[in-house]
Length: 308
Length: 250
Ligand SMILES: Cc1cc2nc3c(=O)[nH]c(=O)nc-3n(C[C@H](O)[C@H](O)[C@H](O)COP(=O)(O)OP(=O)(O)OC[C@H]3O[C@@H](n4cnc5c(N)ncnc54)[C@H](O)[C@@H]3O)c2cc1C
Ligand SMILES: Cc1cc2nc3c(=O)[nH]c(=O)nc-3n(C[C@H](O)[C@H](O)[C@H](O)COP(=O)(O)OP(=O)(O)OC[C@H]3O[C@@H](n4cnc5c(N)ncnc54)[C@H](O)[C@@H]3O)c2cc1C
Image 1 (spheres, chains in turn yellow, orange):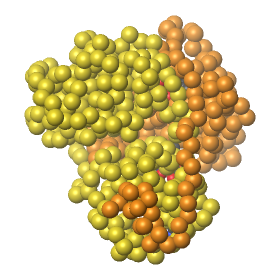
Image 2 (cartoon, chains in turn purple, blue; image 1 turned 60 degrees about the vertical axis):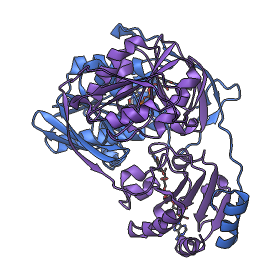
Image 3 (cartoon, chains in turn blue, red; image 1 turned 90 degrees about the vertical axis):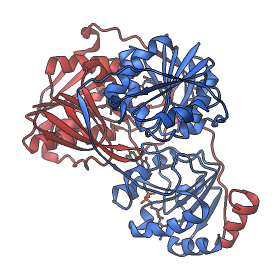
C-alpha cells in the first residue's frame, strides 16, 4: 500500500500538525510520500525530508500553488493520486478547502476529521460536536482522509528522506488570490501550543484581552477565544476555538469568562488539564474543568499573573 | 442572476444528542430539528444579494424526506422565492448530495450557489467543495464577506492565519462561515406568505445517478466523559495544584 500525505505549510515552515498527520498515515500502514506543493518552498521540503516515517518527499514548486488555491491544488493532487491508495491531509483550513474537491474528482467519498485509525479502511471520527463518536468504513478503492491532528502524537524529525522535484503545473484559471490579512503574533500557534488561555464574552472587550496576554507571556501560551468573543469583535476569527473553529488539545487549557457551550467544548475538551475561571458557579464549563475557580476574572487574572 | 441555496435539516444546535443504546446511531426521535445554522446564514446572504439588486431570484433546495419541507418553508419565510425538495429516504453521503445538487445546478443554471461550510450534525465540511469540483466551478469556502464585482465575485475567507480574499469567476460556489451575516428572524406575515410560495418535489431516483453509499457506519458510541474536577478557593491554591498535582506549569 502507498499513501500520499499533503504537507501543511506557508511556503516557509512546515506546520507541526503535519507530523501528527504522518502519524495517522503510519497507522493506516503503507509507504508514505509527503507532498510539498507551494511556491519558493524549498525550505519546507527540506524540513519535510526530516520527518520520520516518510520514504520520499515530492516537491512541486510553482507560482500556481503559492496560495494553495483549492482549484489548482485539487487538480495536482488528483493527478498524483493515481499512484496511491490513500490520500491524506490535515483537517486545517487549507486541507478542508481542497481535499473534498480531490475526493469528488476521484469519485470517492471523503472521511473527514478522523481522530483514530482502526484499520486501513476504517476510521473513527467525532460527529455532533463531539457528542457522538462514529466508526466509519470507507468502501471506496481509494481513500480520501482528513486528519484531526489532536488525535495523534507527532512523529520525530531526525530522518533523511530523498526529495524528488516534480513540475506538474495545474492552473484551473477560475480563481485568483487577491489579498491576505493575517494575524501577526509572536506567540505559539493555537494548534501547536502546550498551554492555551482563552477568553469569552466575560472579557467584555478587546482591550481586556491584555489581561490574558500577561499570563500567556509568562506561560508561553497561545491565546484563544469563544465564538461570542470573536462575533463581538474583541479578537480576530482565527482565535475561535470550538466545533466550527480550531480544535485544540494542549496540556493545559484555561477558560476565562467562557460558559462552556457544547460548541466550545467540542474544540477543547480533549485537553489534558482544564482550568475554568468564571463568576457563575453553575456555568457548564465547571463540569469539564479539573480545577475551577468561582471568581470575578478582573480580580483573578491580575492575581494569577503576579503569582506565576 | 439566480442564487441557489442548498439547505439541510439538522438537530437544533441547543440539543445535546444521545447515542442509541444499540450503538447504531444517535437517537433523533422527538428531538427538536432546525435549519442548519450555516445554511440559514447562506439563505440570508442570498436574500441580501437580491435586496441589493445583485440577484433576481433565490431558490432553496433540500435533499431529504418530506420533513425537510419544514426547513424549506423557513427559507421561503426568510425571503427565498421558491423551493425544491428532492425526496430521498435514508442516509446519503456528501458525494451523493453533491451529485444531486450538480443536477440541480445544470437545470437551474444559477450564477452563485451558497452552501453552509458544514452541517452541525455530521460536521463533514465537504459538500460545497465537492459540488464545486463536479461542476468545475471555483469555490470560496468559509466566507465572511461576499462581493459581486462584474463577472467575478470576491470572497473573503476565514482561514487559520486570519483572512484571505480570493476572486472567483462566476458562476461560483460559496460556503458560509459564522461572521458572514446575522440572519434575520422571519416575520409572521412572511411566514404566512411562505406557505403560498412554490415548493416543487422531485424524486432523487429520477435523476438517474448511482446513489449507493461509499461509506458504512459501523458503530456510533458516546465519547469518553470527562470527570468534573474540584473547585479551588484561591488563586494560590490553583497555582499550587497546577504546579504540584497536575504538573503542567513549573
Ligand atoms: C453553528 C454554531 C457554531 C458555533 N461554533 C462555536 C465555536 O466553534 N466555538 C465557540 O466557542 N462557540 C461556538 N458557538 C457558540 C456557542 O453556542 C456559544 O454561544 C458561545 O460559545 C458562548 O461564548 P461564551 O462562553 O464566551 O459566552 P457566554 O455563554 O455569554 O458566557 C460568558 C461567561 O462569562 C462569565 N462571566 C461574565 N463576566 C464575568 C466576570 N467578570 N468574571 C468571570 N466570569 C464572567 C459568565 O458567567 C458566563 O458563563 C457556535 C454556535 C452555533 C450556533
Ligand atoms: C454516524 C454517521 C457517520 C457519517 N460519516 C460520513 C462520512 O464519513 N462521510 C460522508 O460522506 N458521509 C458520512 N455520513 C453521512 C452524512 O451524515 C450526511 O448525510 C452527508 O454526508 C451529507 O453531508 P453533510 O451534511 O455532512 O455535509 P457538509 O459538507 O457538512 O454540509 C455542508 C453544506 O452542504 C449542504 N447540504 C448538506 N446536506 C444537504 C442536504 N441533504 N440537502 C441540501 N443541502 C445539503 C448544506 O448547505 C450544508 O450546510 C455519516 C452519517 C452518519 C449518521
